[in-house]
Length: 478
Image (cartoon, rainbow, N blue to C red):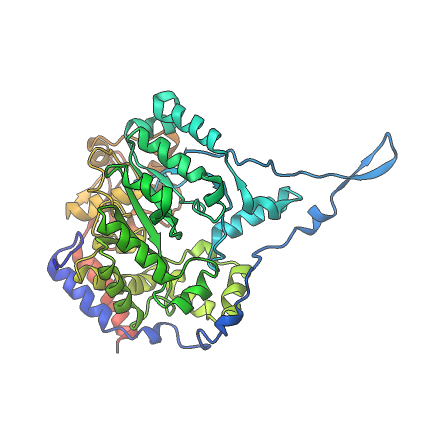
């Protein structure tokens, strides 16, 4: 198959690959505890990331009329009312138009899930029946009505602008929308049918195999190329995958789903996120993962490192319950971006060398991306005008330019923000008025080199990129 490269020159890529392959991964974070010693037949079926807040447990109000204390209850509404929205990550993402039809459908018990951490913390702080949030669903009627209005041009603000540009709607970015109850409620199916009727592009993120079954598969098949699907698979070994994603379908079943969809012409690809050092990014696992992607007919893989923001006591404990050395993984994957990039890029290079495109949200690895859109759908939706006014796209443009880029250059490229808030945020980050881990000079090879009338000037040099890996090899070389 064709050897797929990123945005850098072939010599630079080969040099970096050679440097990375000469690094002893075990030197980066010395071995601490044994991995995967859990008895997989006795996996803990449910792990709470947070507990009910004590102050909320004791909440009561004194009724002056009746002269007694009364418990105050705030309960969740039965129906989930959230719908299509421009993500808070629009400043970093080319595809920020997100949608979910279930709230907290975190049914697969993934031990790394910081969405679960966020939702449990939020609901535990405000609602007395917070544990029920996992089962809230929109009604098909509500979903159809809202989508008809939005896709019919009656949306508002940045959502309307995104729809006018035909930015694909992404289903399942915040939660899982193909949870077991979907077989009964068919809410996601209603969304698929409505979006399909409007011939609007969409993308599905899921760990479920339901997308290759029954009415869901039939509807997806009828969407005439206006759909792409990413199935998250973090490990090819079913036992290890079960320790990480305890209630999800097996990796074998998910790879089978990808293969079945690709064989009938539906664009489907794996997603390995989080990519975790010493867990699923190892010398042994990478070639196994590549082989399975090839067998499934995948044309692209999206990956990203374990989120620095998901460093939580409850999540850490979940890893150790399953026999996984969280501290070793987190320190190598997340605490120092360039080190974490070494692990990620070993995976990226192995996939690309096998003819499978690979892109990432990780800023330091941007020069090695295969696609302008991290999700690998840049060519899948030719009519879509992706959100190009974002930090990732800006960093990619600096790398591609091979020279200096100013804020004025960005504006001359017909930058068109979805709203003024995003524009102002990008301007502040570009000029270092606001901190961001997705700032321009977090990208490998990019550096601020001067100041123009409009703000900071950045440029990209491959020598600068290569020096990062030379320094790493001096410390961690075999």
